[in-house]
Length: 229
Image 1 (cartoon, rainbow, N blue to C red):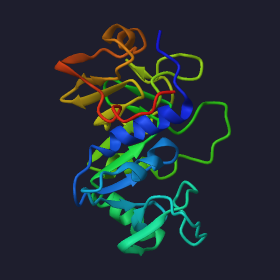
Image 2 (image 1 turned 135 degrees about the vertical axis):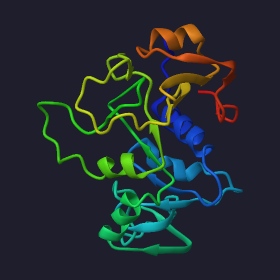
Image 3 (image 1 turned 180 degrees about the vertical axis):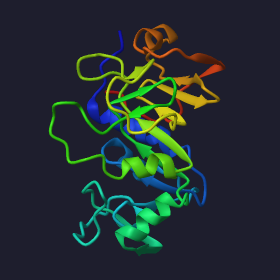
Image 4 (image 1 turned 60 degrees about the vertical axis):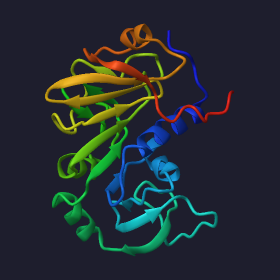
């Protein structure tokens, strides 16, 4: 059985781990929810260019003083870093569709071992539409998924095959949960890292997808500085 972690610890751990994936000059788009937190944990020596769907290029972390002129696509306040600019929505999506975004970080309802992503609807529930995710998952060079390992009922979210309507097919590059990091490459899913409070058996029991295990299997990066609950 997976341990139960504080919700804030879960969100922070996932965001911190994902923030380690990017390099100087990367243009990155962050989806709503946990992905928006990634900008708060980028290492000081890494200078990324954060792009928001609604038209900020060079967005920074949440500012100390809220400015209602600068709000990201998910409704979160953003700061403007030196050299940043605000552009129209059509130009913003032109960047995405034109392949100028290096990576996107998105949440999900389900993801599977083939790299398929289902993150936009549950049948029978009211939805506003697929939104910009459909552009990001095919326009960005890499797609990172930020998700809890299981849903609120304790069911695995990393599946052999997605059951919900897909957002896109075979697009996911990496999955980061509060307990594990998986890579997806050449039609293979590989477990790279696990959190210190879980075992490989815990991950197998709570992951429906089939996966290889890296040798060596490493402890999840970014957890060493966590405060004990």
